[in-house]
Image (cartoon, rainbow, N blue to C red; front, side, top):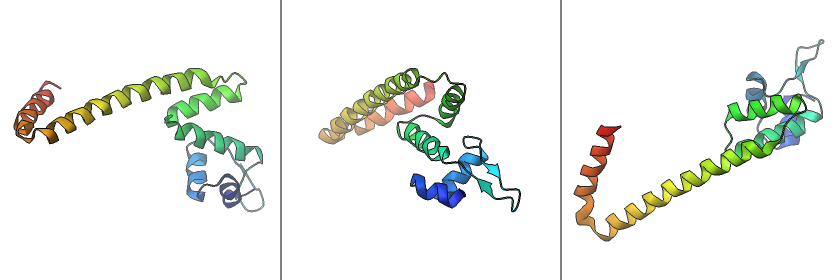
Length: 126
C-alpha cells in the first residue's frame, strides 16, 4: 500500500501519512523497484490509533511512548488517558474561571481598568 492508499484507507490527507512516517510513528518499507514507501494493512489501524490518541489531546511524545510500549507488547492506555483526563479537567477549570471573569467584566464594564491593572500585575509576577 502506498502513501495515498494508506491515507484513503485511514481517512486522512496524504501529508499526514508522510509526516508521521518522517517522525517515525509509521515505519514504511521501501519498494526496491521504485523506492516508494510501502505500508502494510496493519498500518491503517496504527494510523487510526495515532489519530485517536491525538484527538484525545495526547502529544506526539505521548503517542510515541505509547506506540513503543505497544510494539514491545506492554501498552496499557489507561495511565496515559488518566493523565490526559486530569489535564483536561484542569484546563476546563481554567476556562471556567476565564468565563466567570469575562461575564463579570461584561456585567460591570467599569471594572475593566481594575482588571487590566490586575492582569498587568500577574504578568509582572510571572
